[in-house]
Image (cartoon, rainbow, N blue to C red):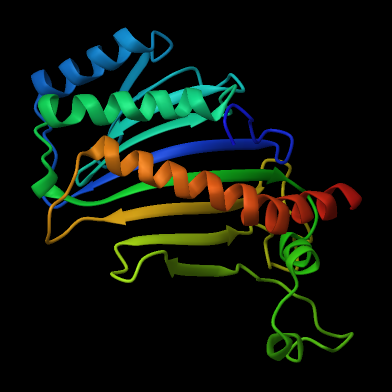
Length: 249
């Protein structure tokens, strides 16, 4: 989709990269700070470094802004994200630099890689019933419709999830999921203003036996498939209908 952004379809969108490893990532002070300093040199808006209670180390921009970057070193995962970039290209550039620096600065090799993920996320701010909105926009299989075909029944949880492979070896897979946040508690009939309905679409490349190419080569493969599926299926068949239903409420 080139430089075309996804902001017209959702209140927030983000493009994240996850490099999943078999061995624990380095957590010593010198290694972590050197990696973060190199990222900050490339992206000066990465200004805040913190260590969470679970040990995750995060370098991020100003989260009070509508658009910000972040990078995280978790125990078994290196993550890179960009919330509301001006264009997908801006997020892709960041992810490429992370993958370029990681092998040398964090000692992550192809042998250590379990999987590489490219995830596209879309958040909709909606105070109504999230599950009913999803059902109205996307429908549901006839067999499931028969379960709730009664005026007395109210839908309180509907979060479709599907995973499919793009190759015979099943090393290249896609996962689509929806997370609703309407509270089923009868004392709270709607979601809070800050609760968002989220749509996630992830393209994953599993590593394994056989000749593997570079992380960047795998990333470009994920990007190619991700953009193609977004343009042909996810945006027109899921994101746009969902946005239209939410606007109509």
